[in-house]
Length: 416
Image (cartoon, rainbow, N blue to C red; front, side):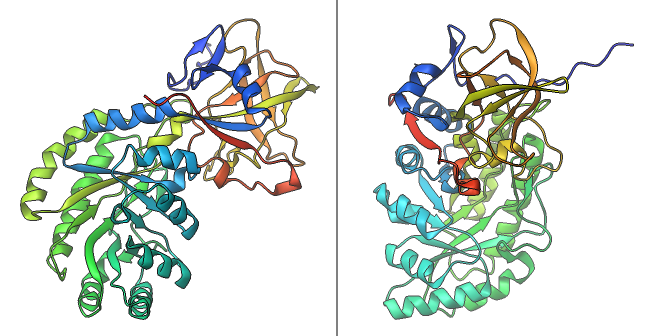
């Protein structure tokens, strides 16, 4: 009986391999590590970021505005670069807002979403003149009061918790009870109240899920999103200026996953948009993406400290781990742990190979970056590279855990 082959990771070609070394930002990984001066570190490739935006511009209808959701990667240098490529920025905290404003982008093209905005967050956003995506009745009342105190008219959109979800998504952000947004069924009442307040209404933000690799599921979600927006627009105090339909575009992380058919997503939107734009003349349709824009442009690099054998298994013990990259350890949303794509960055394919696990220096069995993976044989001094690491990496990890040194972040490569 033949043992079935293990499913493989999707081909990842964003980083070339030259002389058996991973090349990031034009530099072979050993040279880049010497340039950074320490491991562990994250490196983000400018060229890969720029190419991804260009791919989206070609695939999506020209009527679509493209926004970068900073929560995926708020590194200031990355945000600065993205601000020159996209049409707007979306923030999820007062800290992210300050980084966004530092880019010099027009504040009218910045929006702020997220539950639990403090009064200080609301005041800062109102003073800056950005659009606040309102998550609840209470938040609407608070921001209107703060606007009166500041003698400024808040710019607002309603974030809607839809009565549907994005099928096959990695994380459900809408449908059912949620801390996010205003339930669709009570939105007409909230819009009626909004009409009585001194606020400037822009439109809706409707986001139903993230990390989706199925073009058909995204097409269905877009159909339902547009239908919901049209229903709610009938209750709006003024015509819609913006309609943010979220994002949800996924990237392949795990064995057996296939890439999203971006062209099919774009073709679906081209079919749907004419009717929407006729019904909502003058509206700007926004797609808000984070992971899809930056996730594949990043790599996390650690160095092997020790090669260890334990009861028939090989462990590569590195100076990096879950305190820097919680997602790759499997402890950020995975139900069943699966391996990110991992390679020995200074000897990707040549030479002997082995099955090994990559672990970090932390005193917990959860500190696992690769579990029984096929890797080039490695030892002390070799560089372990975790791909697909440009999104939800360092900023989504418990950096203070066990007080190990922090990882560095660098943006590398020339501007195209």
